[in-house]
Image: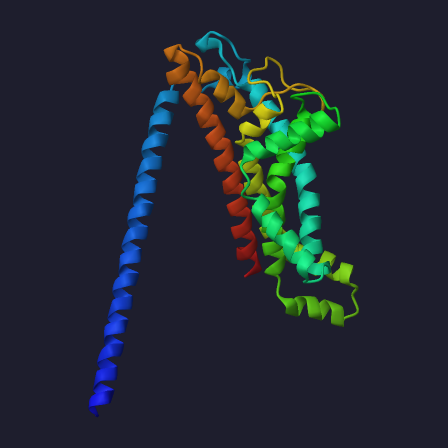
Length: 298
């Protein structure tokens, strides 16, 4: 072995050693950050669940709000959130999937398409209060709908989650192999038949996962609903699209201002626990549906 080969081999080993050290360092940082996050979340959840013990019962879930802590209930806010989020799903799913299908399957890859794609991705990161201002100006100021009604809340939250639904649906559609598209077209199917019979069924689990997660995000929003004038406390559930409503985060916000310790250390944590359980259940359904689909597919 020549001196040049020996030196080259030594330098290469030194570079490999440095890369391994960097990789090991990044792993240590990632593990520590994960452990800190998990421990912090566990401590917070333990505190909230401990404070909620003894207050979270059937009476709390089926009663209306009250200035007396032992009579306070969450029922109108729970139904208000359910009503609004159901409408958001009804509006956002067809609009989001339709936009994703157009962008992935029909639009030409030109400047306009890239411009739309970039702006949709940017809209997914816009603060939620901006969507509240947009909903206030568009649906209340321009269209003349009443403040704080179910329909305005649903429209505003639809604007909030629509970019997320579009982006997640695009990713699911993009993951469908091109060979399946080519096979369907080669058998004589039209483009729409190929999309309807091949692309959408294959992309369905990813689409639903993204949609459910975006709805879980919407159910925890507070700022957009405050901006459109939704009630922080209401004593009856909504009975129509133009009914006033409250939502679980708004009721939590209202109770956080009550000075009595029974609200601060009992009613408020119980309401937070209910909201967390709803969000975790929706996220769990999304993960379960996706894993079950891929397991059955294998």
